[in-house]
Each structure stands twice: as structure tokens, then as C-alpha cells.
Length: 475
Length: 124
Image (cartoon, rainbow over all chains, first blue to last red; front, top):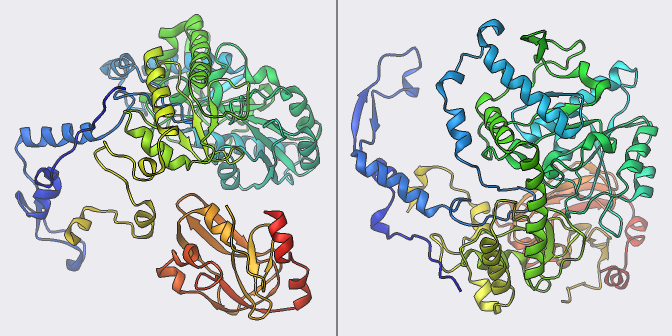
């Protein structure tokens, strides 16, 4: 067994910022007179002033205490924590792309060409007629898709449609985005095989249905075999069908949502095209639509007239969902990834993602109730607590899977190794699964034992949150 | 694993209990075990009138945030404010100190139509 110990530090090594702040050490900056009331202002501002090596050590130390895809395997199911190749950062850092977003279209033809090409590539990959790059995250893409559906129904005098239907295994963002777009959410139970139950769907849709949201393969990694019938049922009721691009990784280059009957989709470029996960920062969640819906896309769209690229406003646009044309620095990384891999590379991606998940599943001792699965699977920890098992897996130098979700599998461990992992990494993951699964109660309930922070009191952290560095004053 | 199911209460399929004597409502032992450590509880206002199946409050655990629905109708006469500072009582004593709200029940018939302890045990 590979030995793993994460960097740990003594109290004396307490982080530099916190120490300097608590000692009020540093430089004092005089604050100019401001129009603000006196009780809201300070005469001087105390700033920490560490020496540069000290500051550098501070950040390197923090990075050593962290766990990342660059540290080891990260099979967090549904999140697709794939490795982000640094060449995409190089492309994004190229100064020639750094233009002010308000520059005239004539003066930034190169940038617009790149965005146009990305729109075209994504449309081709998804089987969609056109794509907007504006939404700043996957969930923002879902919201955009919901607003497009609303505008479409409104334009057809069907504005009364008030419901969005989702399966009980839907990602939490689906009902959240629908609710934010003003819809009531109707949840339908999955069938016994873990897929959409056509009868339940038929019973749920009707004249109030605006949209049905469904990822494919679904949350259990299962391909929705009845997808064409599903789309037909929703379309006959007058609703639209939305593809959550969260699991596009499994189909990339091999099957297209547009060919399955989907009308609207978003692309999680961080999952499918290896841009960094946003983590609340800048992201991108482009949205593709079929022909009937292109008039409703956000403003502006990049279009090509002859040899020129221009910004155009779709006729019945839903308006803006983010500034300018979207988050350029994220989009350019997705473009770089697609261009570097090409057709055959993208096809290899989905093949490896599915192969890796299935190889790993064969190596572990846990039961996997639903199959055949594609790029991810949901194992059951059986009589063990899935959280405890996950904490023990940390001691093997891997990140654990997503735990206790979806609830359709008891003590779920939702696992997605991604296509980037080697056989050696997958074997390391299997060792972690089996080591934790076969561990004794005490070993599990006190885990982790080899990480920087040991067992965290999650309940206390939630009951008594301490959210700023001022919390140090209490210690 | 077996869960505590007191004889003097009525139950729902969604794991609430109702005391026909006091009008108190809470979550069952099974429910608190499924939810895990409770970290936050939100109540209706005292004096509010709750319809059957209307929202009674919100219970948040480290695992999930769940709406709780009132299995019966009645006016809210009291809420268990102790849970605001000590939500762990809901885990430790779900039928006692961990109760959620107290209603002036509109009708006892409505309560008696809920699951008996035996029926609830079968449901589990």
C-alpha cells in the first residue's frame, strides 16, 4: 500500500496573515478625508507587511495543505474534476487577446472570429442550431434556457405554461434554476431501473408544462434509452425538452442531444472541455438551441456576414444574462481544448471516461446497484456510513467520491474518475475504496488520520459558523 | 436497526408525529436518524393558522434542508424556541425536548385518521 501523509504544521507555524493581523504589525496608511460619516471611517489603516519570502511561504504552505487534481485522483461524481492542461492557460494569457470588451466589432475581428468558431463547434457537438456564449456558469445556462423557453411559450400565446418537470435524480441546480426563472417545479419518481418512468412522465406533463429538464446519461450514469419517446411525450404536451450538459462528457463526439429530441441545452465547459471549475469565480455555461428558438437567444450573438464578424441582436432576444459577450478568458480555454484535441481527440475523451469508470468499478468490492453505466457509477457503502468511508479514503491520498447522493442508492458513493486518469491512478483509487470498505468501525469513525486537518466537527461548524479572521480573537 | 415509536402518538408517512393530547408535532426517531445532525430549525409564527399539508417549518441538517409540512390543521399556540440555540435536542430527544410546534387542533378526527404506531412501524 502506498504511504500517504499530507503536510501538517505546528501552532508556531500559524499562517502569516493571521499572525500579522492579530499582532497589528505592519505599515500604517493615512486615510484621506472622505464624505463618509466619522463613525464609519478610520484615521489610519493597518496593513500587514510581511517580507516577500514570508509571503511566498505562506501561499506555498496553503497549497501544500490543499488537495487538488494536481495532487492525486479526484473522482467526485457529477462534478467531473478533470485535469486542466496548462497549455490552455498559456493561450488565455496571450496579450493579443486582451482587448477592452467595449471595442468596436471592426477593431476586434480576431476575437469575434474565435467566439464565432466556438459557437459553431459547440453547436456541432450538441446537434444544436446556434449557441450563446454569454451565460457565466452552468446554472446560469440553465436559467438562460428556462428564460428562452418562457419567451418561446409567450411568443406562441402559451404564456400560461407554469411548470418545469424534473426527475428525482436531477441535479439540484435544475429545480433551483427553474424556480429562479419563475416556474413551479414538478418532480417525478424514477422507474425501478433508475431511468425516467415514461408513465410517471405522461401523468406529469400537460398544458401547464413549459419544460422538462433531463441530463443523459443520467445521474446514475445510465443512458436514458427511451429518450426519443420521452421527448415525444413532452413535445406532444406542448413542452420543450432541456438537456443538462453535466454529463456530456460520456457522449462527446458519439451522440448529440439535438439528435435525441432535446430543444435547449447548456454546456459545462469546465466539465466537458477542461476549463477550471469556477468555484464562484468566472465560469462559462454556453447554451445551445434548436432552429425554432434561435430568435430568443441573449444579446448579442456573434454572426458572420461575408468575411466579417459582427455583433447582432436576435429578433426576440431575452436580453442580457451577463456582461458583454461572456467570460472571454474561460471561453478561450474551452476553444483551445477543442482545437487541440480535434474530432478524434474528443471522441477518445468520451471513450476513456467510460472505460475508466467501468475499469474502476470492476476493481472495487462494493455493490453497484444500477448498470450498465457510462462515465460514472453510484456504488453503495452497504451497512457502512458513506461519509465515514469517504473520510477514510482521504488517508489513501485520494479525494473521495460524492457521498450520500443520489438518494436512490443507499449510502451512495457517486464516482467519476474522468478520462485523464491512468491505470495506475485508477488502481490507487481502487485500493482506497477497498481499504476503507474493509476497515473496522473504529478506524472509520475516527478517520481521517493522515490529513492536515483531521476529523472536522461538521455539525458544530454548521451550528456555530465562524466566517472571518476575527474568529481567531476568540481562541 | 430499530427506531423508537411511542404508543401514544399518531404518525405520517413523511415521518412526523402528532400528540392528540397536547397538539404537539415533531419529527420521528427515524426522521432524525435519516437527516443526521440537525443544525438549524425555522418555525411558523405563534398565532398563525396552519392548513393540513401547509408548510410548518424548515429543518436543516448537515446533509439536507427539508421543509416540514403540517399533517393536521390548527392554530399555532407555541413553538420550541429552545431548538434555535440547541438544535441537537431534535436528534437527542425527538419525542420529548425536540418537539417542533404546538397546535390548537381543529379536530381530533383529523389526527386519528393518521397512522397508528403499528401502521407506522409497518410503513418503516
